[in-house]
Length: 73
Image (cartoon, rainbow, N blue to C red):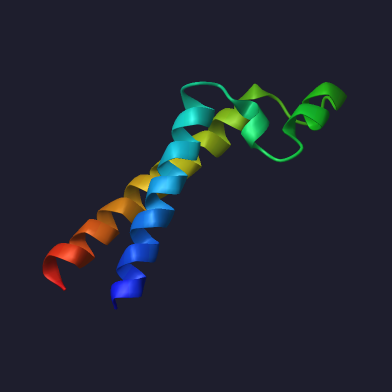
């Protein structure tokens, strides 16, 4: 169970950081192939912001689950 707690915390922190950098700092190069697709007109800035928001929310959820697991289990 300890391994599950550690993995959940690490994944939550990683998703939180990536989501923060993509959504707030506009580092769209963290999304694989985004710059090539952006230049070709297949993807736009709205897509990148939605990916960043999804990663940010997923990171918050995983980090919260990890903390709850540590406290109650």
